[in-house]
Length: 322
Image 1 (tube, rainbow, N blue to C red):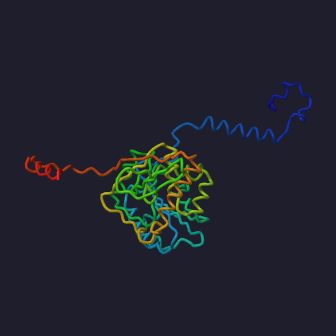
Image 2 (cartoon, rainbow, N blue to C red; image 1 turned 60 degrees about the vertical axis):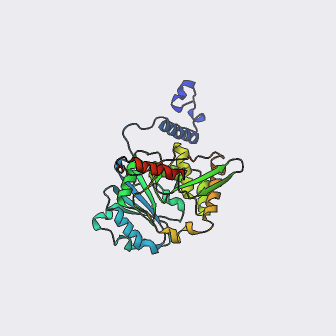
Image 3 (spheres, rainbow, N blue to C red; image 1 turned 30 degrees about the vertical axis):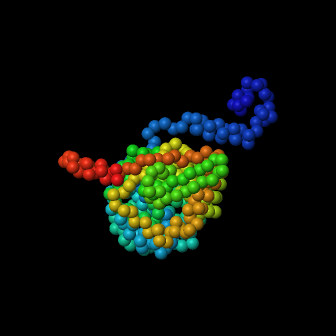
């Protein structure tokens, strides 16, 4: 019964049928449902910039500001970098002005500071209103990468937009019967995870992690302080059913966290395995969303071809048989 059709029911006193609050909720739900079923059509693109990428760096310690400033200055030399967003996790401290010291003045507009109201590793994946690029490069504040390798990785991502594309592969296993998991470093394929230390993702994945993923997983991350990248990897693979993609840089990455970072703790690897187990068991119904990948992407180099020499080939074959 719609209020504007009361006359069809020959009701002499409309007040007996009109209840303002229920009709208000009915109209609001009706509008929301129509908006959901009939979304606005057209070329509306939340991330219109396709030929550049944004950078998101997480930092907390003011002791790292000097080196962080140098890293930002390095990144802004690339014309492919649209904006560098620094997620400042320390709510009790103001952002040091020294952060801008190594940055050219004409690049100030390309640096945005995202000060957080509370400290959480989940904050590194918060959606950003000013983000305009289709791609986001997420990195730790203790990673240094050659710009040509970074730009090459961006090109790889453009061909694997649903994938997490990066430089630190890891392998896990999960047994649904025992609900036990393993987590380890690897020297060869396969791998199942690419860490958030240095990775490209689609910008939509930020919203998916922060606003769609199970909030209790966010609480778990806050309590354990060492699992946000694993939750993100499972979310991305579970959402897109796409394996991660490892890109091997042509120049060595500089990882300053190898001497003082969280991963240097002896309890790091066992705690990571526990995180994998708990996430899959509690939030993915014991169905592992991570997918094995055997691919490694490297920059093309001209193959070395020798003039055929049977003596050399015979020697190789003899050595193989020894």
